[in-house]
Image 1 (spheres, rainbow, N blue to C red):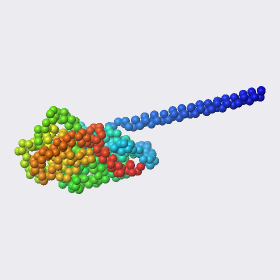
Image 2: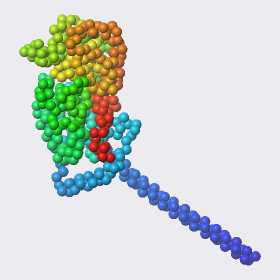
Image 3: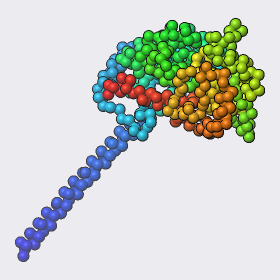
Image 4: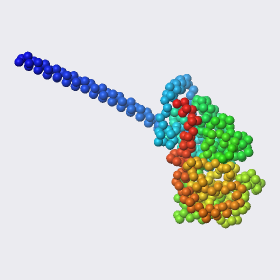
Length: 452
């Protein structure tokens, strides 16, 4: 009996020992789990805090920080080495994002190339000001990357039209080539990205008459051609035609001329409460350049001269040859707005007409219009051949009697109006967003993508 009790006691002791050992192991696991959990929490917190600091870095337009010291050069070599190590891992894209995770690096050029010119208020408001608006929008955009090694494209912010356009409206852009060349010299000496791609993933704005040819007169523009150093790059330009032309013989995106969204909003707020349009056909602008050119032989290919001579006495045509700051108030009262070619095929009237609800009558043979996938041009405008300008009256009468109501209804689609206006902060579907969407379709030009 004693032996049995001893045996029973031994078993109890054994069970207690096993339970005690099991509890100790469980306690050890719990301690390790808590340790790893705190370590994981610490590194996650550090990661998100660092990401926040990087993504909320201030966006001033300032002078570039030129690397000169040996230590800075050593740091750059380390960054290059690190970048090449991780470049084999592809950047993760969001499939739900229409911009496909696009990243753009904005060069920080000396202020003489851009911000110095903003002291002139007109610089950011005239018809060529898309170069300013796009730069400003990119600086505050989610697509902006502060790490050039993760960028798909590189934006070169030089205000060419802003610098040289004059008060009378004639763009004197004779120094554009040398200014742009010096900007390229700066970025190619500080950074490796221009040289590695020969500029193919670099983006410029040429928001004036003949775009990348940098001249207001077509014959001179063609003779000068596109600067050799820009021929591999992407040009955002207002000039575009459907036929072969030396000034679009480069990768390009046709963009709308700049019209201030604030001025449009102010005009719409002051529009007649009943929405009445008491002007049948409207045009205000130059009919001839000067009295020595009354035939219109060169300017507008005689189109504007024909309009003036044939319809200036027709009371249904409200034609004005002199400047008027409040002319948008005339557009918002008009049914048809004439958009004839001037020096170049495009005109700011095209955008103003659409956003203010006046049917644009495009008279510019072969013109290529901006963002055709976003703006249904055939449903919101009329196209009249230059040779048929003398038949304008009968053409417009026919439209007025048939499908005018449908065209006017299409004009008021908010998405259409949004696509033609530049905002300081990018809005989905606006003009800068449309440009980014066009660039996203050209990701095959990006060395940063192809190397991953």
